[in-house]
Amino acid sequence: MKSIKSTVLLVSLLFLNAGCDFLFGSRDDETVNDVLKQGAIDPSLTGGVVGYVPILPVWSGFERPLDVFVGYDELVYVVDSGAATQGLWVLDLKGDRQQFIPIKGASKMTQDRRLRTYVLGRVDVDVQGETYNLPAVYVLQGTGTSSYTYIDTLIHPFNDNSRSNTAFRGLFDEQVEFTGIASTHDNGFYLARRGPTNILTSLALPDNALLVYRPDGSQNGAMRNLNPTLSSLRSGLNLSGLASFLAPPQLVFGMSNSMDFIMLQSAPAAEYKVLWIRQSESPENGISYFENGTLLNFDTSRASRFLYQSFRFGHPSDVCVAPDETGYIFIVDRERDSLYQFTRLGFEGVNPPPASGRTKQIIASFGGGGSGPFQFRSPNGVAYFRRVVYVADTGNGRIMRYKLSTDLER
Image 1 (tube, rainbow, N blue to C red):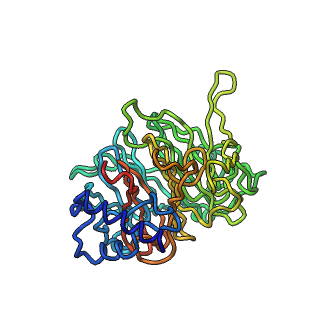
Image 2 (image 1 turned 90 degrees about the vertical axis):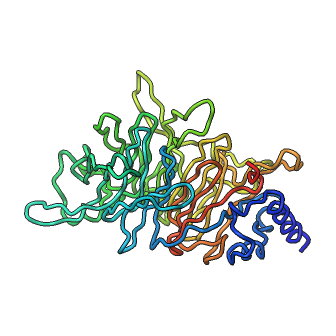
Image 3 (image 1 turned 180 degrees about the horizontal axis):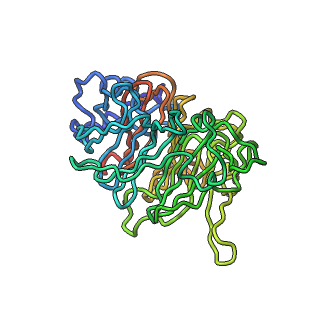
């Protein structure tokens, strides 16, 4: 009880000192009262010291938001899968809606440094007199303006070099899904794919694969050392999300040129459902990909929970990496209705305040099924921009925003 009282006092002081009605809404707002009633930070998770607090008002009025992304144009993109709102909403940083772009089967998106926007969707294609609904990547230029244009559509399997020597598979290809996309610093991108056919002896590469597209419009095919059927630190069991280490510039010394990426697996058999894959390149060996084994270092003197703990997640649905000095990794899990936060060392929790005397990371992950300010229903998207975490709370039809209590003065 003492911890709860101290937490409420801390949050109340922050409200008074910051004078943040513009950030959190009025004290008479029903949602604000709910936040104050709950203490804003769950003391069982943070020990009354530091944690994420919601920014109000909640961005509501969506039907089924599957993804949220903040672009290099500093616009907020929300992918909605609702029957009447299937496509891409473009918002400003205040949450005001600027534009809607209809896209069939829209699910995930990213943007590169040229301001090209990539949206995963579906398209009906006629193949030998039969119509098939196939996964596609829609490439747009000028989103956020009235003169946006479609400049390309990449359709499975016709834009996949690994399928160049195999025939179209009809209903099997129709069951394939694109589940994640992430741009790289050179304006290429990675594309996560999953599907029903994963026979290692087949002429075609498995459906469960990570595709690599180069910036000149060609593509290098799929990573060939991901195991599509057996769990490991380098497996690909029903890929469900993807993130690179590139994001809108927030560092004074420039953007990351790392070609590493983090991918998610949803298969129940996957022991490690969040995998950090590293890329190396040399004149002798060319490009190769390998696991980040350092994340298996469970330093219990510095953290209590870890990214690479066995079966740590239920169904991770999206991931993003903060490009600022925190380097935090954020993951939403739609099965556990939760938002998780880790450091790049794989330690769960935020850095303790310098004067706190603490030596361990402070757990700041939270969630649970519901519609309260710290609850979600099947969250499917997460983004980060200027110390604000955005969550696409699919089942509640809303976008939630959070900020660390220690960042409220920034």
